[in-house]
Amino acid sequence: REVDRLINYSPKRKTLFTQLSARDDSSTGTVKPLCPTRWTVRTGALESILKNYSTIMSTMEEVNLTTRDEYGLKAGGVLTALEKFDTLFALRLSPLLFSAAE
Image (tube, rainbow, N blue to C red; front, side, top):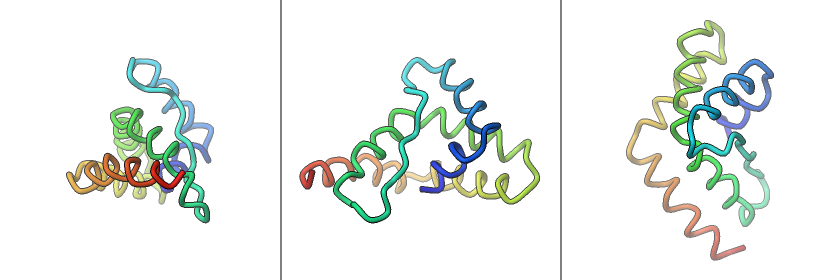
């Protein structure tokens, strides 16, 4: 959910993400938001994060390095989480679990 907020709620960060995704052939260029109440429709959002994983990491790194406000700090925290094996494993496993409920 934090990824969606950091990218989609700011035109500057959205433009940065779009520019970085244009360079990456595997990126779709969009990050779908997670629905906080409907757990059964999360598969699309999780798959969009997986398809854009490297672009999201590049965006978070750029925002962390160039922005000196709370959003730069949040981007650093998201980047740290994305670099962990547990996060990637959960992102890979979650669509398999949630797709069965859809």
